[in-house]
Image (cartoon, rainbow, N blue to C red; front, side):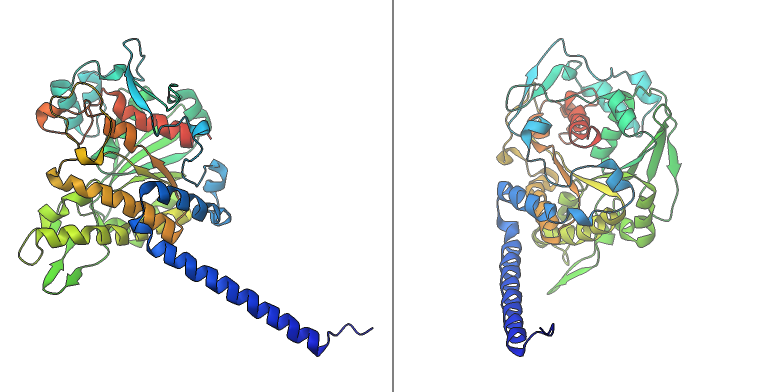
Amino acid sequence: MSIIPSVAYAEKRMTVGYAIASFKLTIAILVMIVLITAPNLEFSSLRQGLTLAVSNRKSLRSPKRNAELSVPTTLPTNQSIIGGVQGGHWEYDEHNTPPYVFSPQACMASFIDQRDCIKTDKYCRSNLTNWVYKDRNNKHYPRFDVDGFRRNMRNSRIIFVGSSLVRQQVQALVWTLGHNEVKWEKTGSTCSSRRVCMLDAIGNITICHRFMGSMATRVYHEGNFTLDHHLRGHGDSSCLLLDEMIAEFNEFDLAFVQSIAWFPGLPRVLNSSSSPFDWVSRMIPKVYYDAMNVFLSKVSRQTKTVFVLGQTGTKCANKSAPEPFSVDKIPNSYGWQLAPKLWNVSLSLIQQKEIIVQVIDAREPLMQSVHAHPSPDHDCLHFCMNSAAINIYLDMYWAEVFSL
């Protein structure tokens, strides 16, 4: 029998092939339609879609260190494993043992920014570490494990990228590891964004903070209006998008990115006749989307990346206890009401572009912590450094990243 297929058979195989190709194209078009409309979906729907989109690309994770860390790339949907931070609540426990005891002396000997020391000492109550977070099953959320962190992250280099909110997390991590005297190594570069680092000698773990304000990929024009982000001056971190700055992340095994804090203030900072407040407010989600698309896409190709959704400003005056979180309670001071839009833009971006990052959603416990800000200083954005609120970041990083 001849092994050469007949003409009829060949034609049949081609017909089947065309049918399969046509079916795949139809599916692709339907998926694109869904993704284009994704920014209008609620957060819960985005979580489900993002889990599917990212799980389909697990094989494309960055090589080298990423595989060694074995960090999940999907959203934290399995609450039985991570403790169920969503739907949890704070309870007061006067017998709670804090991860560190704040003292002005130790703070002044180890600070990244001394304002964290001054505000905490002057404006914060002393019992803020007595609050503990319990999950939806009323169980204690897992606490940060110092020994486990040093064991699992030994010989690693970790960088935290973001605003002063991220700086506070790094400060709390250093104190939790027992470092009360720290000389931060400041790294100079052509980028205006400062980087500071320290070494945890016991675990041989390098811990760095790289400042990120807001940034833009280009100048935006619409009619007679122009949005030139460089005009903001201080806080312009657009230099981080340059390839030579992105290359810096290749030095690190793990990068935490929290990026929203400075963007809501842009309408107020850039407000002018050629860049009016309302127009800039409408443009910010686009500016943010474009900037984070470039940044996250480039960084995540070479370094395991964790994208963090954290707090924005809230109504904290005269608060002495946590309160349930509601978006309606976000004041419009400094443009904070833009933050929920940018939260959704973040998730839409990661879903649409299938960016391989792990997402940690710490918003619920943090936005409940209205009592943990230095409110007498009219600061309802930063946390007191002696509060359990700032440490919930570390607890979540342990439960969802470092412990795995």
